[in-house]
Image (cartoon, rainbow, N blue to C red; front, side, top):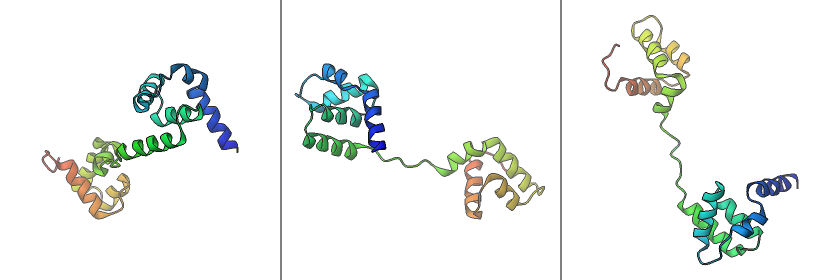
Length: 139
């Protein structure tokens, strides 16, 4: 009950029903109207469609169809690339300094892996290889 109440308050703050009723321009093409209002109010298309349904401007059936359309066209995130992200997590400069120390024999590979937060030897080797691209080793 509390979550439902909070959701309804948030929805009213994002797009008040009274404002939606004056901004809505008919049913000729609901998809374009939802896109237009989403851009105008800088909120998601789903929020606009949900508020239009709450205001009685969209039937439950049209809302479900639109919701399915949005889900079907949404692109799934790849989650990024580990070795590229790792350069930013530890910083490329720090990573190179740690690896140089290990290559020079001033620390062990195991210590370098611990400093970088890498647990597997194969992951460490791939990370080193990703840093090596275009560089002379040892640096």
